[in-house]
Image 1 (cartoon, rainbow, N blue to C red):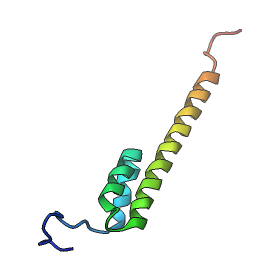
Image 2: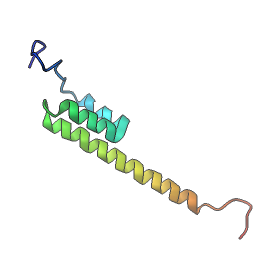
Image 3: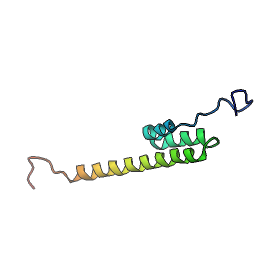
Image 4: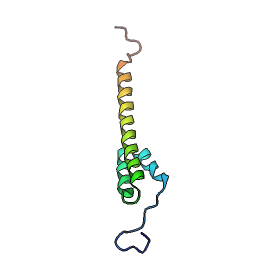
Length: 80
């Protein structure tokens, strides 16, 4: 697959920099990375998708933990 390959567009570079996409955009970046790489490099495409899923799950867990901590904090100056 080269630059003169008709109907295919420009070739996609196989680089580990693609993993920055799911780190910055979570699941959306993982899906974009997967769609861009799945024909060129299956392993790296799956890595992008899995990393996007993992970042999303960690974000949800972190948000739930923060909400749980904020809910357990009492208002200062109010004695019950």
